[in-house]
Length: 563
Image (cartoon, rainbow, N blue to C red; front, side, top):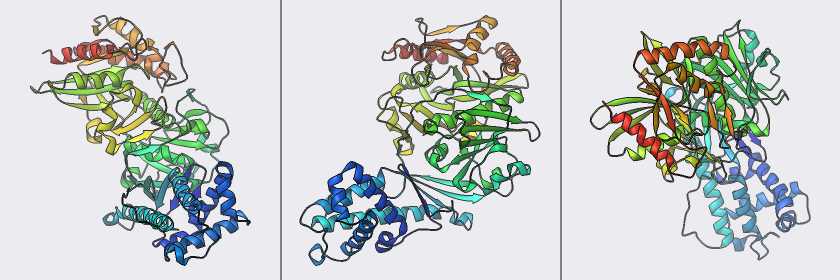
């Protein structure tokens, strides 16, 4: 990032290596502070013409910025009755301007970026710098407010006044790819992330639409963008390494990966990745595509820049699509579902997997199971909440996960559930429908292990049957799972009863010829090892507001308690 400050209507990114004020006067005199002030004045022209005309005082917008910043420096030194200024006119408009500008700043998504990391000993130095900046912004505003109001505040609210998050970065010079991917060495790789939680973000899009399509052209070879405007989150997704490269306009998506995918170290990110995601590609195509570079044995995903892809689901699902196609090449079966290990108080343990597309009721059933089994369940380990994989090792089928967190629809959780981990969570549009939260769920060491499977059930949200139905006929079971039926709930563009190959539109549906034989082999292995196959009826597509989900959860609890 070459600029000191990148400022849009919604985003503010500060480059702490080029601009980091340490005093109140230095803050107000800085070009960055004055740039924010100018943008706020332009905002007032649309939102509050009265305060706008007061701020201009007969001059231009640029002259108003200089005059108001000069007044602000006077206010932090002198008492109000010692200051001579046309803005001190016996009204509250100066105070309203200052409070409005502070709110305007805080309405932005605010981030800090630094490259200044000399050694691992100083690995937390960027957090200290960010915290000092946060204190400076808050204390400067507070002093100006108190001077203009003429009294000391008796209630002090320690608001997040500086940034929402900060990142420490480096350049990755050890990438083992051909010159065709040399642009990656010019992109800043994220080494560490600091989140001020709970982090509340307001993207302009709240739903995923369309499909991820395989293409015959490598999007990396036509990638025509300024690398200095991009960041890379090197993610460990299951046992794979992906470089998630995103334009700074999608910083909210990029930093939110910290709650969902394990961040690779610089040593782990050296060498050859399994895939690359180009998020916010300025290709003008309006598409989400992926490509297999056979020469490099590399998968490349591309998400075209547009307002709609601000929804985090686009980034998450592109990463998981690449994961799935890589795993199928290795003979593993991608699972769009949820897997938990349930450990009872008497020490018994069961591995439970529910498969289903978005809105089928996987996470909701698990939440209900957790509540119903409170007295019988010692703990639950979440191996994956959305996407994982099955494979057979020495004749035994095992499950592994992909994500260390869960991207959950708030509307589908118990009322108190979002607040249990509020101190660690990232919320997206919590005031809207289809609001989401990303919450850490499991350590990477857990999700990347082999986990035995005891129950593999299809999450059926459209039939009126109840509880859990065991299926002994292997062909019948495969037909139900492969058909992938569900009643759409509005989490995507689909409506009504729909079908998706193996309930997984993220790789298996696009590559059915590759996935089909793997399904046959894995299901035969499940049956040979005595894994229970079946359907669990969630009723979420029929009666989303009812308590039917508890019947499904009780059936799972009964199964778990069996010897």
